[in-house]
Image (cartoon, rainbow, N blue to C red):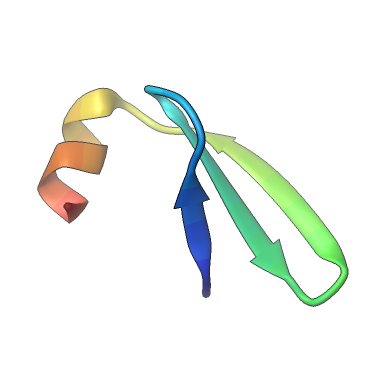
Length: 33
């Protein structure tokens, strides 16, 4: 699943033609990175 971090606490997941915007905690993003 290709995902691109837009802003702090926001992650966009692109699946085919469907685009989903999921609110994520800054800490979770740091752990993933």
